[in-house]
Length: 215
Ligand SMILES: *Cc1c(COP(=O)(O)O)cnc(C)c1O
Image (cartoon, rainbow, N blue to C red; front, side, top):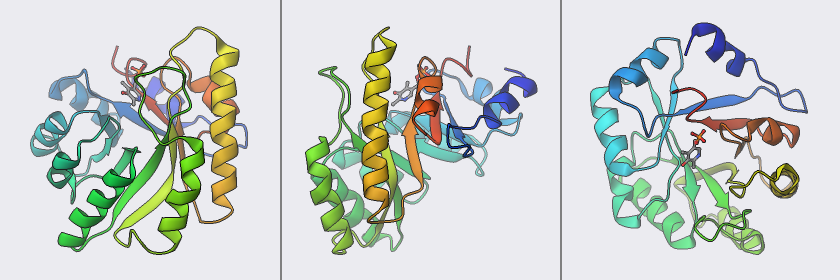
């Protein structure tokens, strides 16, 4: 990774012309590899396992913004509340409650995204689209006082079929627009190394890049 390459990611715009925030997904990378990218002024890093996240947080510079992007077990929530910058992978009501409770105990607010299942892959987590009305209804009735819902996250089906991927991104983008009308949302997190250009066509403004950054 060179400064030129990381700056090319930093200068990306989505179809609306909005800035795009890049999360460097470091789940397969060593601390040394992370530091090489950090030294190119990249401050957002994403991990999918709590244990790795905590270990890397402890060892690496404190001005890194850590993003939790993988399935989060409720009993691990307490380990990341306080330092986590953004949890992308909120995929159940029980997890939302737990994040709210642990944040209340520590007297702080945690920023999250709601993960929506848009893919056909059986293994992918997330709320179904029809559950989102209840998520936002609870949120607006102050059920989650110590959580800030900043947007939505989704992962497309693992396929070579670009029109399939784009129809899933398009669907999530419609949901993002819909819920943006009832509460202020800031981030639509969609797109990985293989499909971020498709995601930008549907106005993603946060992409999660692993292999494209850490070759
Ligand atoms: C691993 C991972 C990524 C990055 O994947 P690449 O294909 O390496 O860019 C993005 N999002 C999530 C949720 C991941 O688990």
